[in-house]
Image (cartoon, rainbow, N blue to C red; front, side, top):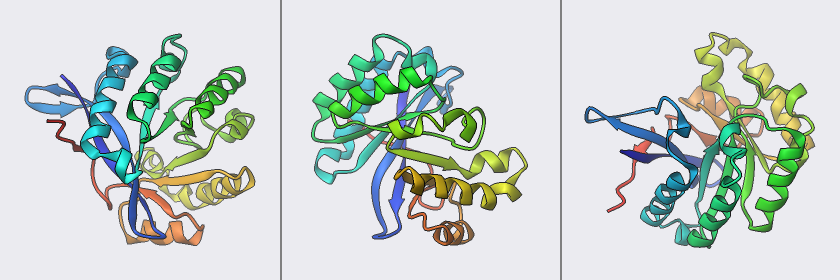
Length: 218
């Protein structure tokens, strides 16, 4: 069995939850674990789960955003785009954003961005500054997205936490230059909050505000 867990995203300007990232989990031996492959369950089936989550959270009324992850294999599936558009129509007026966990090609993001924006669906580049999402690889993609996310936990797990302030300063500057929203992920304590405030970053996500939790869809 698969379900979506949700983690809140908080705006420090008003201390309110403005959205949730939905995170796929698989039930195994009475516990919930990360799937070995996120493509083991189709985007169509994930869309059904997301629709249930939107209903359970009543996001059409609260105006909170649901952020849904796609990797390149899922993005390149010819059925994905239509599935997302159909989902948005079903949950309307609830807000939806798509977080790309990998950098697609320029041609792919141009097509994806143009179509999604016609249906008022936001587009996000996740994990900027780590993995393949370096500035060199994604700089030409930035005009086609609405938001970037910087995940401090990636630096911590890689043992390079000391690089966070320098990299955060760079990406905050890039977000301002391209007029992008910027979510800081991995906020765990008051030190992280202070670092974000120093760079003028008000949109936060992390264990300080809540761990991923299961939403009852009954």
